[in-house]
Length: 203
Length: 236
Ligand SMILES: [Zn+2]
Image 1: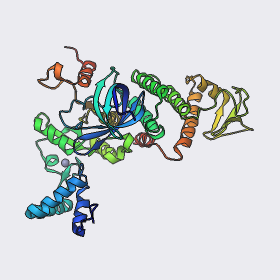
Image 2: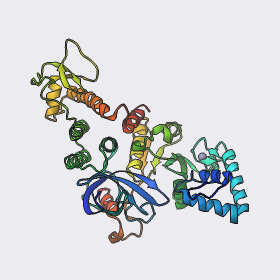
Image 3: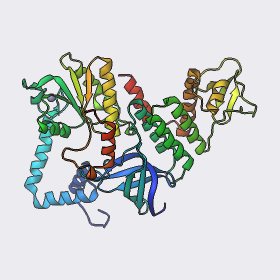
Image 4: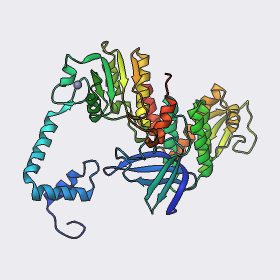
């Protein structure tokens, strides 16, 4: 029975509970989704259940870049056209996709699947820094480009990776930050302008 | 908590994602102490608050509402060189101490000022040990557990040439013969700590161990995340 005293089915209860594992889904959104699937889109629900089961069974982490893949080593890491001397470190698969969209980077990647977050107890092993170090010291990688977010957590992550690489004689660089392309100063947030001022360069 | 406030000096201690696009911000404000605020839409890509709601940055905050108030404004209050490297880890540590030890909605204006000053010192490269130890000392004092540093547990002046054992509930007691462990501390170190003077390496080592033990008492055996993460980093 739910709070209003309406009897509910056990299967429905389990579905509501299961949907709530999704980020940002509370009891009300879960209810809306469940009713939609069961009432209006049973075919879609079938598809969702199948896709989820298949992904769980087939998708794993690439042994080289840590991104999701169905193979031992993902197609990007296997590609002979990529420059294996450059390794770009990103926080998430979405970040990797964004850097790829620029078409300005032809090297390899390592996906942390997170960032160091000391206040949440997320430490180096939780984001695979030990595996990244192994990957970056394979003798082929010449430069590691740190493309973690410009948050305090992203900065801490980049700092520690750079320190560890320096100790192992691997060059580390950090992507630059500043005013967005086409951005007019008047409309850019103060923090970004302040950083751009600190990170200014000589012309 | 006051239902409406404007232009309040404050810092973001930490924030958590909330629902699809919002954030719950744990803020430390000068007048109202530690409060939780709901920043609606702050995780949207174009949110103006995104680049502002950062830790270690002096802000002016405005909010309204009851239990979990809505953050209505957040402005940059001063430019601080961003913390980097170990100074950044020290900043996380200060934030964790406040989050774990300062109760919500309990104003601590003195501690707020020390916190702001500590961040400013860290940002210009001041020696970390001195900044952390004086903050810890002030924090304990604000919570009602100011360490006894100039007199021993029997109210006799501390003798710089003697060795003491610090008893957490009573204070330093002269050690009989050899004493060791994190609570063993020289009189000289106690007096240095009273003056916030951390130039001597022995003072730094003993003070770190002593403060760790005294803060441990207040945490009732819970360990600090920032300390564990730093240990793990040093082990890689
Ligand atoms: Zn790969």
